[in-house]
Image (cartoon, rainbow, N blue to C red; front, side, top):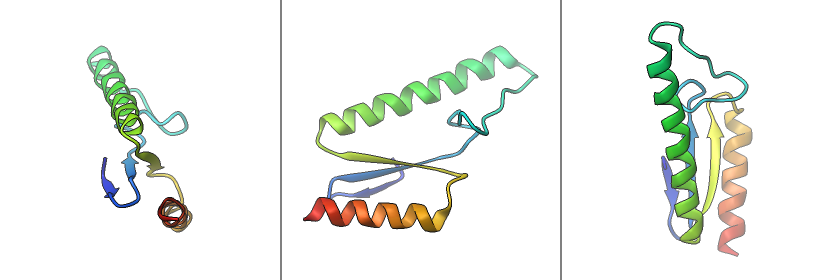
Length: 86
């Protein structure tokens, strides 16, 4: 996770479209394609495992993609943290 709000148990994972396999903007390299496919698949599997572990520990995971509007994303995170404090 990239940002944590421990008192609210909110974790924010900021994901780059390439490195985390965005379904909208992710691309597959042509050079050494098999190696990159395995690498990017492993990144997605790690992301899912990390989110699952955090959720099992009582955390709420918010995923922010690099293509998301930063103002909207910041407002969503702030509201999520406020709500979890209530």
